Length: 162
Image (cartoon, rainbow, N blue to C red; front, top):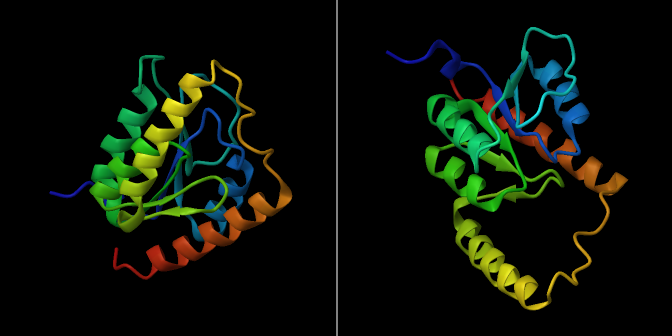
């Protein structure tokens, strides 16, 4: 028997470093989607019965494991928001749509290259002895791109029979 949540639109958020939580809440309200905000520490979420806080222990990949397991249950009508390429790969394999916080979609065709690039960049950073500048600041254009991408995904998921 299928979990009754498998028919609902669901957004799973890798929340510890997610800069677009407020945007996710707004879009979720418009589409009446359930949101699971998964993190290693508790923080405030809106008082809304469709928004759920999930605090996992601080074990290595605990949040990723929870999200991947939940994705396997609700994948056909699910979008995962994460910047973690390895988590994105796990969720894509389960059948979910996956977006980075800047709006860039992860897909099955490009995830292998993203994983390879991640490994190369990790090697480069290791050789630079911590002298990296980090990612560029998150800006208004990133936020706008994310909102547009999430809206497109939610429209597409809404077309999937529940």
